[in-house]
Image 1 (cartoon, helix red, strand yellow):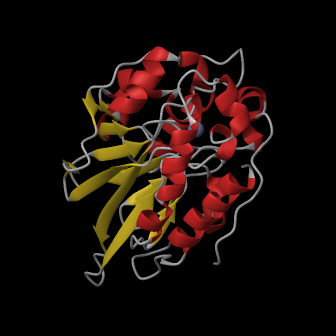
Image 2 (spheres, helix red, strand yellow):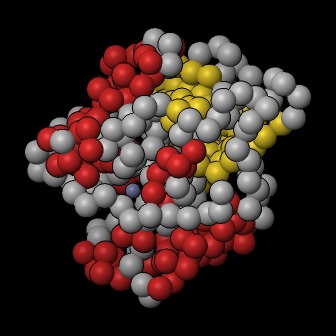
Image 3 (cartoon, rainbow, N blue to C red):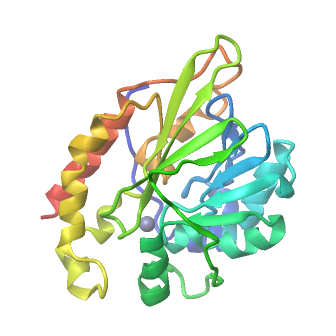
Length: 277
Ligand SMILES: [Zn+2]
């Protein structure tokens, strides 16, 4: 499947709050150990079974928390199987349900120090999209250190600070071994690429983000596209149409890998940011 992206959902919080079935999706497997579990098609959340508990990347919003919980339980996991919650960045759509979920499962909460400070100092810039939404305050248990992978079971997640969309936006990379043939695959998830916070109009009102962050995002293009990623995961499914892949993973011999998607995705997002300059 070639790389492609689609338009985002207009007014997604209202849709999830009042017509959730319009965005609902069953959980689906992406690789031997990773599943798409947000329960909705607007914001992604990924569950990784490490063999010794699970790691969850992002929690989506409070309005869709029940969909996320249902997805995880449908796969046969208990919430207490989640040992670590990793947040990609401090925007409400990715971390809005973090506190409620943490209370339900007792997991450690991880994020970048940069976005933690962003969240504490300018909560009004965390993009709460709907005045009726119900974000709850949370505190990070651990901050990422890019030279120290996060380890659980047989998974080691390497974090990479990838500023631009927010000051502490963080991307994740990890390897999984195919139990059928012993081959190793690299999965990568970019933490945030939205140009909505990388343009002069946004900078003119922001108390915290500056054009220097956009410069850094553009400068990182070469470094990021040089990375080898077999399975590229988006923070929003529309950025890389992975929803099309739901149901296509049926066994270890049928893994969707395309090492061209990651670099095409990064180049396309850089193009979108440049187009607004
Ligand atoms: Zn965001």
